[in-house]
Image 1 (cartoon, rainbow, N blue to C red):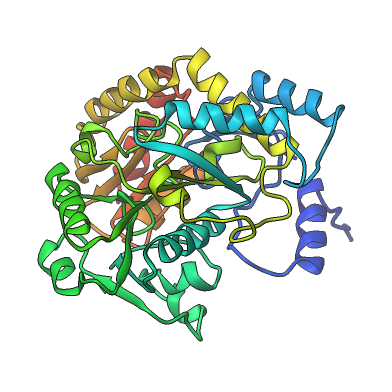
Image 2 (tube, rainbow, N blue to C red; image 1 turned 180 degrees about the horizontal axis):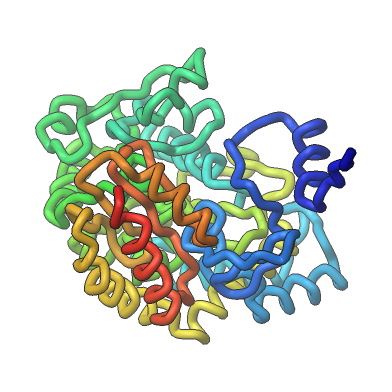
Length: 399
């Protein structure tokens, strides 16, 4: 009789399953370390990470600039609240405002994307004296009360019941549906410039321009939820102000995901016009703007600049699109930069995702069963794209 001896992975999985509340359906691996676009599992296996842990690992896993900054800050001061001034916080805020499109001039730090969106809506209500928020079909803005009430994707809003009132939903891409809802009772229109979880849905630049005009006509604030598109993901620091947005700059931009290269941090960036309505104690957060997170923010931005990652994103996007043209089962490639949706003729995205994972390549699915998502680190190179393309050809040849 043979006795089964648990592997290191099985021990880890069993312990976590025993003591942690279930959330996502997990990949059959235990992540142990990472370097660049590579993730290493507890069994020694090496995975090409084209998902980046929900678009978080923008600078790559354990970028040396980020690691060094975190280590140095951890040895000086891990945390103190916003009750004190902080040089590391001041530098992070100044750098974020510097790279943001005008007239963005103020930053508010928090801990996550959903918290950033909650505070953005609160700021809009304070600035306008109104309560209603328009978001869009297919939207995902987070899982806390106001953010999940602003979400229209799938079952998420139902999970948040009872919902916060005064949320209205327009059809993504339909200006007529926006115009039908927009009036002097609306505080803000909030949208993801590219709807990632909905299947990487993106609109023509003219849509964002028309949306800006509707907002200005009715005194409505415009919020771009750039939790996924921000911090270089699309080849520009922000979708806001880019050619893809027809140069449109919203009144508030929300950020998280890649902002700290894995250290939890979120932010709202806004204009002086909005900030002038926010008084002391109107907003607050214990951990937001903590020193460790602020060191990670500054180091993340430094690493992206020093390694010319924005240019790399544009270059690799073009190369990916060129190479993906040979995959016959693809209908089109959606998105921009390194937020891409691969749309298959048939609803096989989940099968392709599973087959790629079995071959040690991590990708993401979406709410659209036809669309496979790529959210890799911004340091992705040609040879890694080639490996992905060769593997994708293999797994789609019999689908």
